[in-house]
Amino acid sequence: MIRSLRSLALASLLGLALASTASAQFFPMTSSAGSTTAVEGSAPFKAPFGIAQTKVADRNGLAAAGLAPSFGTWDMVAFSADSRFIFIPSEETTGGGLFRYDTLTGAVANIAIGNGSGSREADPAMWNPSNDEFSRVDPATLTPWNTVIFAEETTGGRLFEVLNPFSTGSFNVVWRTSIPGVGHEGLRFDQNGNLYFIDEDNSGSIYKFVPAVPGDLSVGQVFVLSVNAYASDPGVNAAATWNNAANASAARTGAATWVPMTDAMGNKLTSADPFVWVSSTGGRSAADELKGTPYGRPEDVDFGRLANGHQVLYFTATSEHAVYSVELVSGSQAVVRVFADRNSINEATGAALGSHLTSPDNLAVDAWGNVYIVEDNNPGDIFQARDLDQDGVAETVALFLSNGVGGSEPSGLIFDPNDPYRAICCVQHPSSGNDALWSFDLRPYDGTNDSLDLLTTINGGELTTGPARYVKGARAFDQMIIHLNSPTGKFNFGPVIFFYDLFVTGFPASVPGSPFLHVDIPSTVVVLDGGAASLFAPVLAPQGMYFGAITPPGLAGFSVMLQGGVYSSQANNGIAAVTDGQEIRFIL
Image 1 (cartoon, helix red, strand yellow):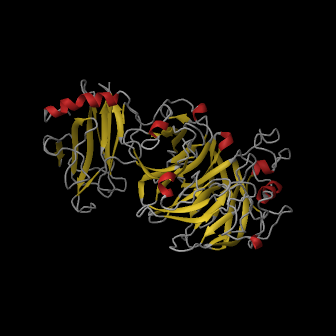
Image 2 (cartoon, helix red, strand yellow):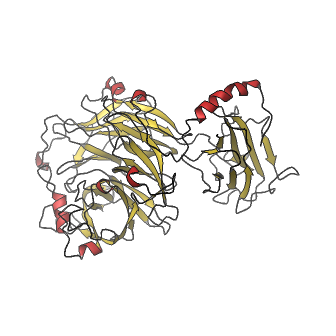
Image 3 (cartoon, helix red, strand yellow):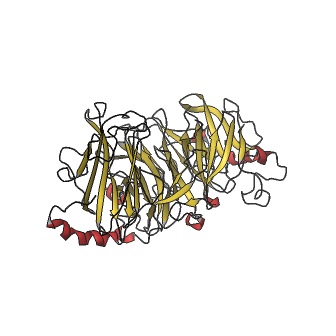
């Protein structure tokens, strides 16, 4: 793969490349960020090669656009379906609320603003959305019917719905009194439009709300999750904390049941009233009566899917330093498992994570089913957990990003619904007071977006591609394996193209008019159609194409760009499907 350098300019750039390589951060990273306060406005996150971070907006910058002065402590954001608007909650104790940011125009719309009184209305009949306190508004979520819900993470927290979140005038905000009072954080909907939520407490439970009419949260049935073995244990105390002596050794995983808290029309089935807000947490009292299984500060939730086709609900348990998975077996039955905790394997070291995983808070699931775990910590790490066999238990956990801005934590990570390679996340409550929202581009070398993948591995590890796995490091005499395949079989038996291009690290080539190519065409080696000089078969086999190489010495400071392709009129461009680029950086 060695070819002559095209100009002396490459040699002059080599020193820069070697200098940057010395501080290389390959994925998975092995350590958290140090202080990044000095670069808070430009690069607050320590990130692996191949991930670019860009500021979307910050509190200081939006002040001139009309952001409510009290709106700090930005938390769990939500995209609009078209990705144009971002709904951002303010988790301030007084004067909190929700605002909308227009990424196209930069405009701000304050949707709900707490009056700063510190006094929240507990009686729905007396509630006035334009003159009430909103306290510790933590989550915001787009509903399947294109409204936005947000809720309070505090005693007897209330849940609200914005019926017209895209209004250019006033907003219609309603209090959904069908949802019990709990310490809200995570809010997500399953494939049937049922709402799942948690109670953030050290005796917190997991809840489900099934609307009586799909798409209408005004009336419905509430359930609480109860592990069967826990419910049948006479020695447990559901009102006690998860690690209380009565609960510490009790079963909190295994087969579970969604126990009704109300009937289908929302009438309570418990002696305790779930619908007590502000003065106390009614939903918690009702859950305790029903032996809802207690967890250590459940916070965020998100959905994935298992190999058997069942949906799976993930939730963090912050005080337990753990993430659980809840397999939705049927409308009434579930299976609870520990998805990841301090015993999970750190992909970077092969050993248990231990205390590196501390206070997991938020969650996000990407298009490949990877689960991202966001710490409530400083430095605050974000991990990528992979469940390779999709059984509800992660095989490996890898350090993905790390925020080191003084006084802050990362919060609200979510993936763009229209771009699976883009995520956004807040830097929340930094010491500067300048909360900010950041965007991450996880795909440095775009291909043609066809069903064609190029996967690589160094020294016998797993063949990978995807977020954070586009740039890998290799030393002299390392073994590199490459696999070209079409996951859907669409391009099987098509004529193969393969590109590789040596370049000074940090200065990849580009092809004008062909943004999907990241190689220098005139001097790269291109293998076409399995000709006499080819190492490959003439067409792509159903099992794909494997080949390997030993990296030669003397290349530190250089990289090789790899791309594969298949000629096909079925490609998105009508000519050829081309994979994303994979960069192998040669290091000392």
